[in-house]
Amino acid sequence: MFYLVKTPSLLKKLYPECIWNMETKENEIYLTFDDGPHPQVTQFVLDELKKFNAKATFFCIGKNVKEHFDIYKQIISEGHRPGNHTFNHLNGWKTADKKYLDDIKQAADIIDSPFFRPPYGRATKFQMKALQEDKFQLKTIMWDVLSGDFDEKITPENCYLNVVKYAKAGSIIVFHDSLKALPRLQYALPLVLRFFSEKGFVFKVLPFS
Image 1 (cartoon, rainbow, N blue to C red):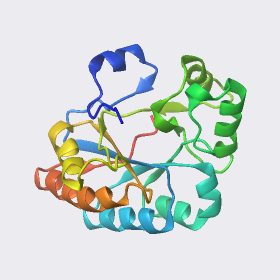
Image 2: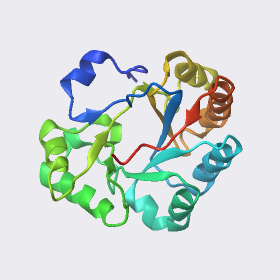
Image 3: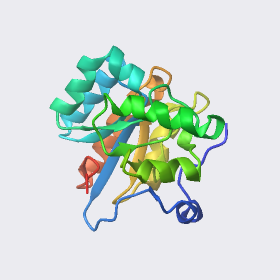
Image 4: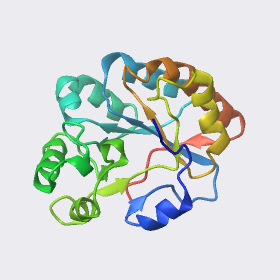
């Protein structure tokens, strides 16, 4: 499985319509979690975040929100923010435009957020442009650092090291609140929270403006 832990500057320049990191002079980091909500895993994440007074943005799959709406409500009530991650976790490169956009609209009917993240980070230029129009008014949020927690071939320690090696002020970091990621997430997330907290960083939600 090939993926880039640190997003290269060239890729950011090729897709300027996407938000890859936040511009800040403060010690701020933006944790994001994809593919939830999940009763066990999302609850673990929320409990860990609470220990460090950390806030995060959760890119939710619509069908999971529908099935676990109580967890979705808990995310919001605890001061975190949701994001749209499609209803059925579709790959934009492999899905017809209308089907893809309709799926995002279906998710938007139950996920109240101005943020969208394409599953697998894969959406076409046309799709991303359409999401900026009046019908959607969605900001496409990508990432600066990929933890790799979804990769069953890496160790939990390497997942942790991926983040602490590459994250800096303004970084948008991706973890996953999914069962597949849990063995690495359980190890890496508490250590990441502790590492950056001890260095004076705060963990914030993505800003609406």
